[in-house]
Length: 405
Image (cartoon, rainbow, N blue to C red; front, side):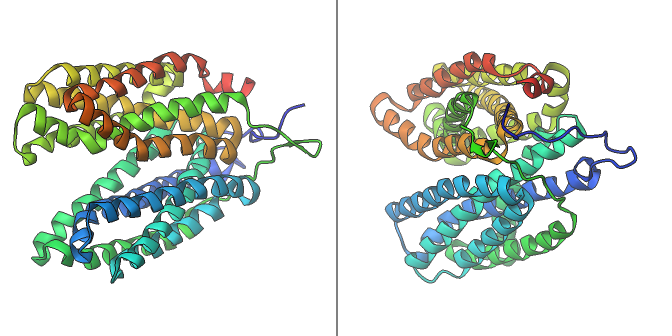
């Protein structure tokens, strides 16, 4: 006998009695949820420099806040994943989005460092739970539709994050506000938009199936494949975190350009991640998840090798674009396999590995930068991406193979 961790056979959406999870409405709900999560996280991340100025704190205090948020997020992922399986991911995701909104308001109104820390803890709790639960919903929607759609969902998270970050510039220019004064109107505005989105999501988000992880009343172990997926998440989490946090600094220092021009590194990473995620579902449908992850690992490894070896601005930007193109393919597929394999419990394990690496990886790279120099430190994520290529061999060729597994 096996654990009850997969959904029952589903009819194709559009046929009489079709599963609501396979409807366009369900797909729109998940898309909106990913975008809302991205909006809140993007706005918060872009407001950090202004928050530092508003509160009059230093980089050490910012690091403490980020550490608290990360620790709360990791804890919340474990609880949220198990709750998503026990009571349904819809309830967990909507509750987590409410916590994220409360976090945005707390950060917006924080008069002191202590209150800001509370806001960051709330943000970690909300983000950890929604990260797992919305991926659980996405996996069930994908299963009901019987066609790949995970990459598109993740693309809308990236787009939401881009909008949230861009709102800082738009509001600063339109309201003629600079520095710490932008934090309150920015985060309140984003929170209001998120509340409106939450009202819509309450109406359109489908109910999901609880998943039992037991055989004859005995709780089953987490499958071994989850730990392999976790190792892959560790590799792409560090690689993506390095690209997000270090690409602009790398271009600035290696190409000897001003910081504004150096931002082309992050722009290239972010832009190509969105592009590949919008195209990723078609590639999965044609070639399968294993091939897409393997190709993503190759692109990212080659991209990191390029930025390690060259110093001209055009080649550096091209290298970082290739990194974004590669890492953007990997996470949606690894998370999809984890969700299909064991629901929220397995997703919690895999997402935690990726989340922890995303948070801690850039700090590890920072240590290497101090000892090897910023140019050559990028060889480490190149090797990790090469490891993803090898580990991809353990992934199922198709979702049919996954169900058989």
